[in-house]
Length: 90
Image (cartoon, rainbow, N blue to C red):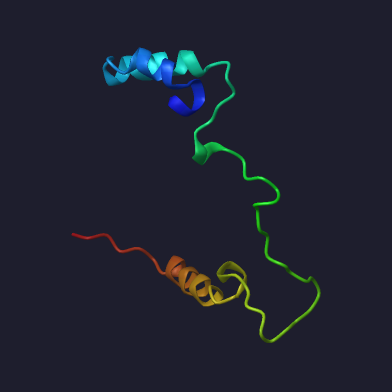
C-alpha cells in the first residue's frame, strides 16, 4: 500500500481489520495503475532468453524433457494397459 499510494494512505487504513483494509486499499489504488511486484511485466532489458540456433543437430545440445522422446516407451506401456479387459472384483 505504501509503495502504490504513499505513507499517508497507508496510515489512513492501518487501524482497519484485514478485510476492510483490503477493500479500502483496493479503492485507494484503483486509478493509480500500481501492481504488486510479482504481477509486473519484466522489462525487455531484464528478460533473458536462451540463445537457440534452429536447424542444427549438435551432439552437445540438450533437448527439453518434453522433446527428448523418452516418453514414447511410457505411451506404449499405457496403450498396452488399455487393451487388457477389465475384471470386476467380487
